Length: 511
Image 1 (cartoon, rainbow, N blue to C red):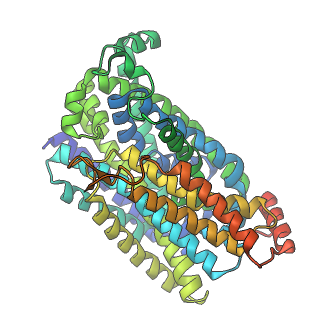
Image 2 (image 1 turned 180 degrees about the horizontal axis):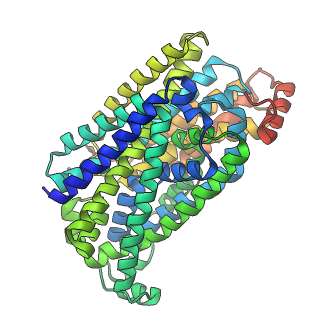
């Protein structure tokens, strides 16, 4: 066990629990639990969004992916960043104007139908759990490396902590944990990047030249095709990354934590700058790990490369930098999983329990109780699923969640705002087709099935050959929404659509 790392772990945990304690005193109503009573400023929410978005996939997964596969790993950095342009120009303001607590509120503003709200809630819960598996895998590997604990116990520790944050502190605690984590992560990544850059005499040219001989891949390290051999797989991955963010529930609910749409737009701009700087620095993390840690040591610590960044910190700065970076990575995971649990719990309590089961008659106390129990349920399910995904790269796992989000949520969000004829049947069909097709294709993909024992969850030949389902499931989600609308006998409410357009663009008459 690394004593210094353990001490910094305790400091991080203590700090987040103090934040949760004070937040719990301010979390008495559903508005405070779901959205922090819309009290965050633009820069605060921008930092919180960045903290929510820069997950274990970003810090641990991308660094490992670049270190092991070179150029192909950088696809994740590019895709994650470009995705925010879609969020900024299509989703942010309309969502803030039309919604109240969850993504389903936005769709229900146009289609006041229990089935629509129920399916939207189902999507939110499914995507949140999928995304959370990646974070828990990263946490398990990190704690196992540092403290020598078994993977199962490591995942349980994080699962318990994330549940505490949400159950007691709600969105206020979650937001401030994310803000603190974003600052720490940027500081840690900047320090490592500067040290790595100094090793190459602050020369980009020298860095790229020396990387040609620094890894077993040789010159191929700087070329595409090391991981993604099939061009369709590359396209599928990038489609999922670029379009997926606009459908991620834990990112979308962050737009409800500010007072109005202009502030929501400002927060996305702040987040984009912060995230952009971070993803540029992932080049230094990946190259540094490949050059100064080495392929064999990275794979020995974790076959998927998830521990590359902490190992790089140890190689460059000894025990202290190793402990600091590892503690920051731990804070990263805690912040993201708290946001994921909150989005899933909100969907269950607000959309399913309050609006469907109780038909809008649930009291504040009943909704709060339902949300807290839902938080526990989501955490338990995610922990159980994470136990089967130990050997998978966390960036790759997150890309699958992005594919599900882009397939299940984005088509309905876009058509709700921009298609006059879109109706209830189209909304339900689009969401279900996108969700089911993405999940089924993932299940039959090489991620789950492999002829080689230990390479995937099950031994066998995959029926679907692509690693990412986005190129198939995303168009299917749009096609499902279109076909559902055209074949349905239900007519779109023209007056309602006009009202929605006005609200989406101006915020007048916000729900």
